[in-house]
Image (cartoon, rainbow, N blue to C red; front, side):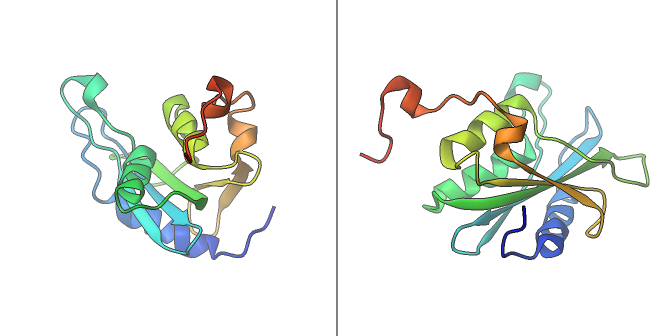
Length: 146
């Protein structure tokens, strides 16, 4: 599973996005960097709210920023996260809602999810491995490209 993009560069962008995290309640700071098919990178961080349902994850922030700019085709996303008090990062997988959002815009059998501890230490998964029974507009007999 090796696509033609610089995973370390994408991971570094996720670390930069993580620095902008707003996580005063959980103190769990997450950054994501989303790579478009055109080679653009969109960063995202988690943004918390005292009303927890109003929070937004880093992955969705990156996707929503890209979609707002008219992007609809994506290659990969890098994700990093840790508790503020910890020195080291651990592998941080996307939540179920973020996985579902990814299926709206990505082919689960091609889109790569890169979970990183450092730019050199990472794991790569296909989205299909993380959400094996995905639900899309096809299940509703809707063509979102119409």
